[in-house]
Amino acid sequence: MQNTTRRGLLRSAALAAAALPAAGFSRQANAETSPQFEAIYDVIVVGSGVAGTIAAIAAAEKGARVLMLEKLNRLGGTSRFSGLNFACVGSPAQKTKGVKDTPEMLARDMQKVSGGFGSYELALVMAQNTARAEKFMTERGVRWDGRLLKLGGHSAERCLIPEGDGAGLLTALWAHMKTLENITVITSAKADEVILDDAGRAVGVEVRTNYRFDMSDSSEESNKTGRKTRFGAKRGVVFATGGFSRDKAFRSVEVPFLAGVSTTTSEGATAASLKTLVRAGACPVHLMLYRFAYALPTEDMVWGMMIDPATGKRFMSEGSSRNTLAEGSLKLRLANGDRKPFMIYDDKALSKFHNMNRIGRSLNGLNGIDGTMYKFDTLEALCEHYGADAKAVAESLKVYNEGIRSKKDAFEKPLERTGRAVEPLTETGPFYGIVVSPRLNYTPGGIRFDAKARALSMKDGSPIPGLYVCGEAGGGLHGAERMTACSMPACAVFGLIAGEEAAAMNPTNI
Ligand SMILES: Cc1cc2nc3c(=O)[nH]c(=O)nc-3n(C[C@H](O)[C@H](O)[C@H](O)COP(=O)(O)OP(=O)(O)OC[C@H]3O[C@@H](n4cnc5c(N)ncnc54)[C@H](O)[C@@H]3O)c2cc1C
Figure 1 (cartoon, protein in one colour):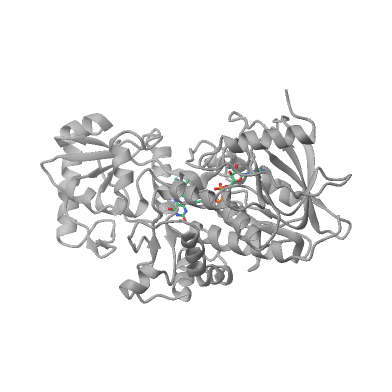
Figure 2: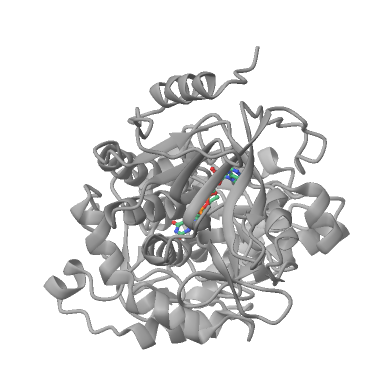
């Protein structure tokens, strides 16, 4: 039975909170009520991934009474499954190592891969605030694993890796959040509509509590569960609702050939909140752009050789960008009877990977759909496993190795990455194989926002008063190819800005 009274709601929120990992957030004692709203806070944050968590903490630390809503029955969104590698300019690690880097360098790196779509201005604001975001997180318990990496596309060593990946980072922030009396968290609570006052200012949200997310409905349109209620926000409403990679119906309207592609994002990554924001007058942008990822880091594919099982031959550079690799391999599959290409590595190649955790997960069969890596003593055994002609693959390997030795690769792949050389592969074994299967992991499109994380209106591009958007819910910053380790800084920086700005708004009289 659902809780329909206010007291029932409070109890169910407390029970939900008690079940949260490293959580147990208190119900705020001093929320106000009114005939129009079940409870009134200063700031409402929708979404509990890294952007929402940081926004909630930032607003609460400015003195705001904060309500954080999460539609799933657990916190963390996609952020929880992510590595959350963090491109940061001016970190203590860079200072210790004497790395020369500037916000402009990072913003320019991002522009280079954006295909002319990304916003240099927003990228610069992001880059200028990364050191502040790093300090904010570190002071609130986040730990970094000590590495400073120059990942694909970055012109400097600047990427930090959180201890315990995304889950570790969030667990630290939630432990801090627990110490803040003025944050209330309700899980299984879906924000359906933004409430605007007569002047067009966002003053609250229509919500369904006791919402039961249904995995079989990736658009959430047929999900009618939950109890309808309204929460008020005197200062601001922050949407940190993530991307929409899971929404098959929505993405196949935008890009039909993406209908069947799998994704590694959270089950909550639907387009429902994007539609909510559009109904409130916000402007969507770049909805046809997608970003792919692979079971193993894209930038580490360069160390191996990629083969079409139908021919036993290479067909493109393994050092290509993630979207080029996705396009190349998906088009190949259209032509070869949907047979997935596979990578061949050897021990030396594996030792060059920047993320050994993911190799470990792959070798142990713990890296999701198409994420398992197998070890073979001979090339014949590997080819049998992937259904490829062993003679053709042996010939491809010989030609590949000659190309690497003579520095004339047939597909002009880069022969150096992160200061390390691509080397010829063993011809005697052991070998390692894994299929190449692009998975959607990010949607660069979303709601247009400005440097203060304000959602911009469809009508005239002006900020919608009281409405903020941050993290993957925002669009227009990255463009066609979001650079690796750059969603995390966007989430952290604009989460921080959104929380601070919302808390600083003049209170409205609701
Ligand atoms: C496997 C993987 C690895 C990645 N690795 C990296 C990396 O190393 N570095 C990097 O920069 N990026 C990485 N990314 C991308 C990055 O993790 C995400 O872009 C980022 O975590 C998104 O954070 P967010 O807070 O915006 O959204 P999310 O973490 O998705 O959180 C949004 C939350 O909002 C909730 N929500 C949505 N709508 C509503 C609603 N109406 N009401 C209530 N709740 C709602 C959702 O359920 C969800 O919990 C990776 C992505 C994947 C999938």
